[in-house]
Amino acid sequence: MARFIMILVLGAIITYGVTSITLNEYTSQGTQNSMDDYSYNRARDIANGMTDIILMRIANDESYRVNSPITENLNGGYATYTAENSFIDGDSLIKITVSANYGGTAKIITAYAKPPLTLELDLGIHCLTANSTVKVNGSFLIDARNHTDGGVLIPQDGTYAMWSTGNINTGGGFKGGGTFNNVDYIPKNPPNSSIIASNQIYPGGFPTTPEQVFSNYPPGTTLKEFAQTGENGSQYVTDPELLSYPLEGVTYVDLPGGQEWTSAELSGNGIIVVHNNVLNARLGVPHGTFSGLIICDRIRLFKADVIGAVVSLTTTQSGGNIIGNTGSIIYSKEAIKNEMKKFKLLNYGFGKKRLQIKHWNE
Image 1 (cartoon, rainbow, N blue to C red):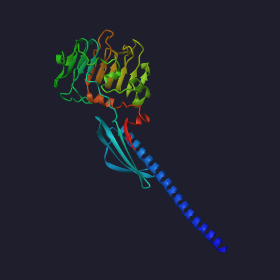
Image 2 (spheres, rainbow, N blue to C red; image 1 turned 180 degrees about the vertical axis):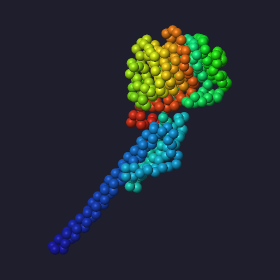
Image 3 (spheres, rainbow, N blue to C red; image 1 turned 135 degrees about the horizontal axis):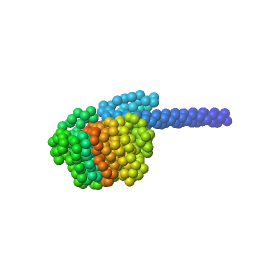
Image 4 (cartoon, rainbow, N blue to C red; image 1 turned 30 degrees about the vertical axis):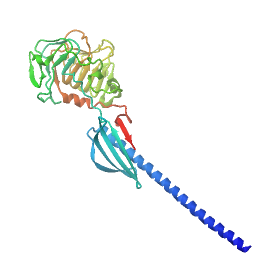
């Protein structure tokens, strides 16, 4: 009997020992799994976080690239990353590769994003572009030879002084210059006929909205909506008296049918839009000094000094001269591009901070 009891006791001890060892192994394995899972999630968070940071850096600085790997500490771990130009499926993209590490656990993310959008003028846009009869008088100057934003001449890179789907009538002391077939023509009175293009046909039809002035304007945010955000000093008004100066960003003057922004002050830079849905908002007797692009329905007696370009959308001006007795339009691709770069899409991620993500691979 004693021997039987001893056998039972020894069996119980052995069973307990085996069970205890097994439970300890399970517990240890569970703890390790929890630690591995925690480390993986932290590494994944670090990789995602660093990818977002790089996207924000690119959004704020279009030239930002990292061709040689850089390592930064982040959230208790570290991330090694590159941001390089790439080309996939016929699309120019930015490839962002992030390898994150937390507690010895690694996670890699590769993302492909579209570069920040910079608007581009349609090829049909020249120094003064109109969809109607153009009357010019007085001592106004249009020089469509290309210039820097500071007014320095760039030879053999300009365009037409005036281009219109209607007649162009010049008179008085008006001087016009420009570039045709890579030949620059200095401003003179009367202007050389080769840099005046009347009764033209606009490829695909003349723009009827401000957005159509650009060759790559994306669907989504309109110039009006962008102006309403106030980004980069943009303003949206229905009463021009409410504008603040100097003008910056996108200045959108939305006038009721047939009304005029009279004695319009154009002082500042950016993109100015004077427009309504029936194409009869009028920019009247504008003055001041402006750098960038002006898009309006109608024009009356333009007297401002502009470096950039001017576009009139309407087919019916309201009579009288489009161009006044004084003032100038000096063509500058650089001035226009500098202002168009300030336009940022707002329809991805954290407002203006994110780019368009094409691929995100974990």
